[in-house]
Amino acid sequence: MEVQLTASTWTDLGTDVLVPITARYGIDGNGPADSIASSGELAFDLDNSAQNSGATLGYYSPIHASVRSGWTFGIQIRCVIHY
Image (tube, rainbow, N blue to C red; front, top):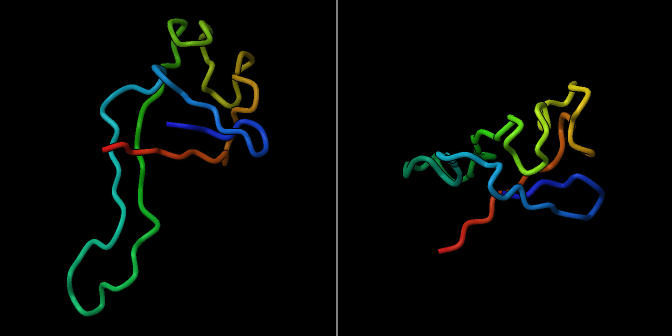
């Protein structure tokens, strides 16, 4: 899981991403009207405790005083799947 905390730089969230991660993408059906894929959905949890990679409680809370630098509402997140 990677996040864009600064322009044109992707940062790996590493062990702060907790399992399970769920993703839904592509074309949901196989009927004649199912020719365009949806935008998809990605759901995951982050370790927001003092035991995360930043050792900071509230690291992933956008309005917390100890928020991770660059972490805010509407930032770009991507999930790379390796087979």
